Length: 424
Image (tube, rainbow, N blue to C red):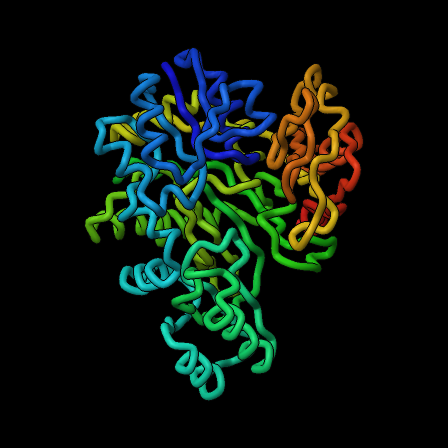
């Protein structure tokens, strides 16, 4: 088989690494890819949103399967563009990717089908949103830009003044662009966050092992929201009771709700859960692998991932026995100092070859490029250093040990990824 992967981050590197292990696959392309992905795939200079070029490339190279890693092209309808030309592609169509593409849509879906989530209101006018905040809201409260905002369009406001400023930022200053045309105002929930990824074939859903992401830039969950500074899997807080509850009220219910709405979902549903005192609640849905969750979940997957992708496309997921290793993994993101605000790039990266001979250690490239034959930094999040261990504590120690093998000029990381493990 020939496989095309669309995307350029650490998540796509993890997918490419896993696809390369499939005996079914003899050639991988990645558009646009990065310096790490180039080890497994031929990188092609086509952007993830250049649908016509991607489709033309897939036809020219007779690609057997295309895997879409990123949210923007899915929400934009890349799967529809491929299917229209009779090409096999893994991911939800545009009318299903709205599950991630619109927070207002997903909240309304949960309300309609009694899927447990936080109470909320949707607003299309800043004046109405401000009136609601002044007259009816309890603080703290959460403001969410409706559309895609790179994981950064969520503000937690402790006071009315902060909330008023938040409405201005999202709806009037349009900090997140058109994503802020509609605003969701949501009750603030407390509890632990857990991410559960799942494979879906339109009717059957099979969940993967749990994970937990760390969104804030600095230690102790301080600083600005980022795309994710590190993650661990499995979550010790995702207990049998939580799993039973979500099986009953969340997972299948979501797949069935989408089908009932005429929006058959095939691909990956990422469930962002909050474990509250009143039980699990859905914080958000994503329509693809999380990043950096993929970097701890995929290395623990025992199956041939290509077989799973194909079963989702063909509606035969019920025949797959999805299995994960009985161990743990931790990923620490090495970022450029100053991320997510401003940072320099183009610094040479040393030490990548150390990972080659080490079993259970991985370095996934998020923002790297080739320059004069060397691999250099090319983004805010540069690398994801992942390590396995018999349990979470061992995996965490291994991951932090492995971060020492890599050096580049403005290397920055959080030192407390997985700290919650100690409290479990």
